Image (tube, rainbow, N blue to C red; front, side, top):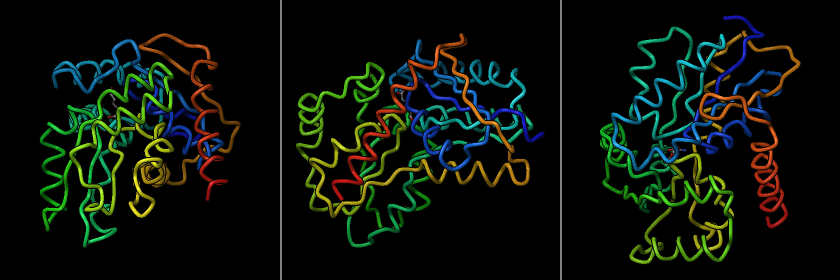
Length: 262
Ligand code: DGL
């Protein structure tokens, strides 16, 4: 591993930009290659084998650019392919899984609700994780698959998203919950809208910062001294930054909003 090699970041679409956003804050001097498989999004509604093939192909492409590490910034891709990827490549591959453990530990008297894609919630990897950490049987889960394509289409229309969430949550008694886990990187874009219907005493937990810290640990003393930068690819083709930077700017406004609203 050499300091000035790039770091690959991969997602089925633009969800992984929420991880890139954190990475740019924590490790701003690194060179990043962001790969969205947007032509094939969403992954969460596809059969497992198909997703595994798509992930293997995308990672082959990223690995050919001589990266020092890859972050699979997608819970769905991680759940079906991370073991195979780690067997194939000798550089660090950092995966993501719903942050169920910190959520379970956050408030032992109340339940935990995990939002993720249909495929993540069907997978053995998720059920193994829950079996390991949910000793009191307090974890419930709910797929919010449609949010993925709303985000892909840059559709953050407040009325539409709020009524979608209200309908999805209509049979859930939120007062029983102490934490909600955002187990899909696309869902981070809807955090402020979720905060409008999820009471403030419920913690909304995601694994993005933890993933970036994990990346930093894996890089050890091989951190780049700069200059940093990002190159973007969409399903194997170079793509102009403006398409992706719009999302990064949007994340910035969400942060400012939550900072000002306390
Ligand atoms: N962003 C993804 C995740 O974290 C997957 C979304 C999808 O393609 O369905 O699970």
